[in-house]
Length: 279
Image (cartoon, rainbow, N blue to C red):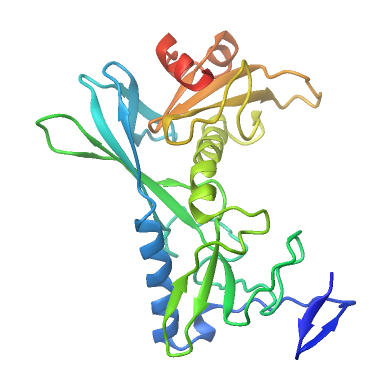
């Protein structure tokens, strides 16, 4: 892939990435970059409605299983995203968190991109460790704010520097290497967050969980839930899942007999919730 360097078009034989941490920036620049990303995430709030009788969850038990409860009335719900604090137990081992900038080559797209669009030399590509939180609003009652959940993977953000100390999250003309906007990545990552949580519930070495959606016609409905496939980690390579789990409104539900057998601690998903994510 040819790139422009110093006004010349060249074909690199080697690409060297230098990981620059926020500690390598003046404090005011690091702070303004963090503020720009936080502001962009604040604007990505997703809204939906929890029907009466459907399961939702605001907390986890000691084993990390979401404590599912049924809505006594139809209620509105918002899903917010925010930068995971570096000292949080959910920060994980991200390759490049916001406190560790991960820049793309400053005048070319990253090597995994199939795009030919020239990236200006004031634009940085940063992977961000994100968490999400549900807020449920029963009619006539105080909002129910859920515990945060680690997002499934670090979304990629393009930051443009204005040269005077300010940063701005660009409208994704460059994408994340696949043409996805920040909003696209957040919506598509909700199901991955559930799959990650489900892996923690099963315990290391006990089960292997299919990441993503599918199974019995399941589709990723974004903020309204998805189907996660469940496979036994027994050394074989099954062609079909051993069970299907629904991730919806912060709760994990067993969608069939296979999932109920493997994860008996999960509530059985009502028919209307199965239909909501398989329509």
